[in-house]
Image (tube, rainbow, N blue to C red; front, side, top):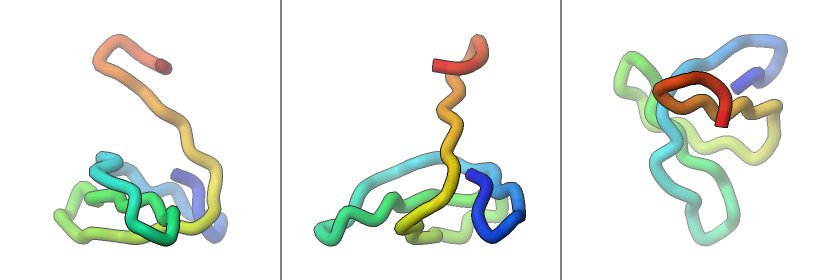
Amino acid sequence: VIYNKEELKGEAVDIDDSGQLIVKSESGEMIKLTSGEVSVRGIYGYV
């Protein structure tokens, strides 16, 4: 995710009741996102 001009790597784990994407960062922090640029990648590259 590119958010506030910073790149955040992690795993999308859920979407909450208000539509926020919940991402678990590489450090284990759970972050709720309402906007940003998301790239989805699988094991073999982009999905």
